Amino acid sequence: MNNRLHILLVLPGVLLVAALLASPLFFLFLDTIPNLEHPFSLYQSFLEKGFHRKIIIRTIRVALITTMICVILAYPCAFFIARYAGRFKAVLIVIAVFPLLLSPVVRSFAWMAILGKNGFLNDLLQFLRIIEEPLQMLYTEVAVIIGLTYLFMPLMILPLVGVIENIEEDLLDSAKSLGANDSSVFLKIILPLSASGLLVGSILVFKNNSSSQCLWTAGRIHLGFYRQSYCLHNSQATWWRSGDDSINTYLSECNDFV
Image 1 (cartoon, rainbow, N blue to C red):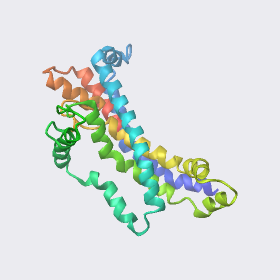
Image 2 (image 1 turned 90 degrees about the horizontal axis):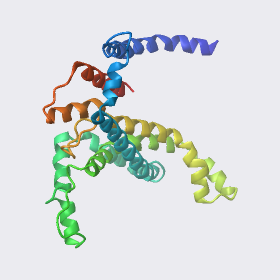
Image 3 (image 1 turned 90 degrees about the vertical axis):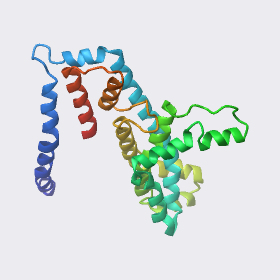
Image 4 (image 1 turned 45 degrees about the vertical axis):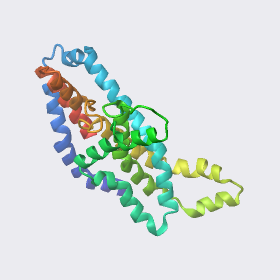
């Protein structure tokens, strides 16, 4: 009885969200269907173009790489903030989310100063005599990955902090009292219990990576199904056909909806 009551209470909100969010996507999807005899002909022609396939593959590849890097870097940070930060926890969380508070213009010039040919990183490598000539770091896929990792790392840290800090200390003490060492406690208790935070963080990072605007760190490399295609086509003075425009808009809006 209680379960049915809960469902009835939630149902109006769910229907409202579906009406306001899902229905526009449905009508936008109808615009991509030219006729009932060949409903997916525009999608077929869209995917037959090597240019579009290259965009989609590169978008997914960069998003996956960035997500994996964020997992590797964010987990130790989140673990330290949740378990050992103490009274400095709030300060460290503010520092962690600081990239999201900065203006895109500020981020752009900051990374140009770091990754440019006359930037800090090239100067440091030349000072250490690791390289003789400045490296081309801007306008590369590596620069895109670095910028996306910096920008979306907070989206991985925050869910992990919330999950890890809710793991009971008594549970860890009990495992240690039964003879488990620190590595066993982490692998068999902490990591499985924090899997939900990893999943949420990975979804947030991947989604935001795959729908990023034309990224300032790369300049000439653009990400996102619709946005990347639109920017690259404009840079090549290529006009869109209405079918491609509808499909790219639909893919972009579906990605933002997810």
